[in-house]
Image (tube, rainbow, N blue to C red; front, side):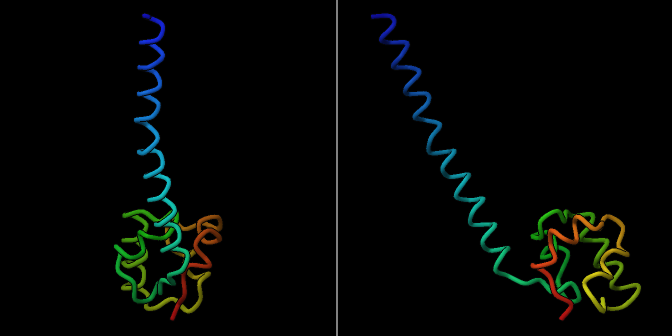
Length: 101
């Protein structure tokens, strides 16, 4: 009887985890698809909008906006390499999500 109760507890615990795992995976998928389908113009986006890009956090987004304010609009996507915190790997990761329009 004790073994049956222990197994039942384990099953209940495992079942309680399933909805939360499914929800977080769904939330991640939704964010990815929104980001993947939306182009972000680095010449007009706010810091908050830039943070939706993969690998761009609050500090890097602020640096992009500050660089744009100090030096004018970006002529090409590769100009983002002049921003501290944006390296070749980050640029490759966000290249298809950004434009200079």
